[in-house]
Length: 375
Image 1 (tube, rainbow, N blue to C red):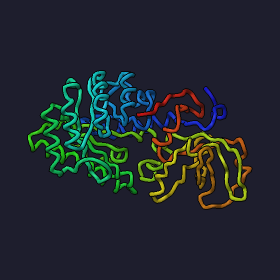
Image 2: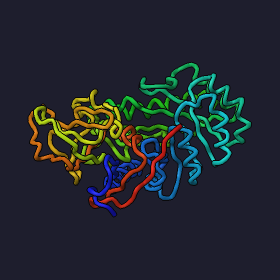
Image 3: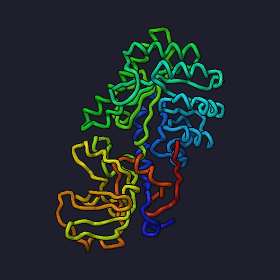
Image 4: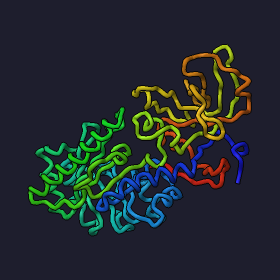
C-alpha cells in the first residue's frame, strides 16, 4: 500500500467504496425488474479489474470499440455487444471475433448496412445477432420507431437469420435538469424502444431483444415493461455532468485526478497545478448546465470538496485553480508541493487520458488497475 503523497502526479484515483456503492445502486434499481438483464457498458472503465467488480460471476457486456471487444474476449467474456454502428470495413474483423465468443452483437440503422452484413452472414456461423438502432430522442443515430424503413431493415436481417431485436440510447437525458426530466427521458426511451419492437412483431418479425440504457435513464426508470436488457456505463464512476443533471451528488463521484501545486499567480488569485488537459481532458460538458464547473471541482487529499474552487483553465500540462467568483486566494493555503484532487466533468474522457487507476481504500493506494485504449 502507498499513501497518496507517495505516488507520482497526475494520477487517476478510483475510490473503491464509492465504486461499490454506485454499482449497488443500479443493481437495486434493476432488482424490481427481474426480466431485465444488466449488460454494463465498459466504455467508461476499459478495465478488466473494473469489469470483474461489476460482474463478479461474469456475464454479458457492452463495448464501444472492437478493440474493447477483443480485449474482453481474450479474458473470458463471451457475450459481447458492440454498440456502435458497424462500419462495412469492420465486418471481417467482427467475423473473426465472433468465432471466439458464444455470442457477438452488433448494431446498424440502414438497409445498406443490413445488406452488407446479410451477405457476410455465413461467415458468422450463427454467432451473430444484429440489433436495429432506434433514435428515441433525436440525439444521434438510429431509425425513428415509425420510420417506414424499419421493417425493410428488419426483413433483410431476418432473411439472413441475423435479426436479434432493437436498441436505443437516450443521449438527450444528459441534458436533464431535475427529477421530472430524468423520469420523462426514461419513459421516452422505454416507450420508443418498445414501439419499434412492436412494429417489427406486427410485421411478422421476431424481436427477442429490447435493449435500452443510459446512466440517467437506467437509474430513474419507473417502468421497464417490455425491456429485456439495460446498458449503462458511467454509473460506475459518476461525474460532474451526471451531478449537474441530478443523477448523483459530487460526493458520489468515484474518480478524481491527483495533482500537485507547482506555482502561483498571486495577483490573479491563481494556484497552478501539474494536471492540465492531458490529465483532465478537454471536456467541458458542464458548460451547458446550470452551473459551469470549469475543468473540474477541487477536493483535498481526503476527497472533501473545497468550497468554490474550480479549475478555470487548462493547458497541456498546467491546470489553473481559482475561486469561482474570482476572489483572492491565500497562496499559503496551497503551498508548492501541496496535493489536491480534481473531480472530472466527464469520467470517460478523463479516464481515457490515463493508463491505470490507482485504487484507493481508506486514503491509501491498495492496487493499480490497468486500462487499455484504441479501436
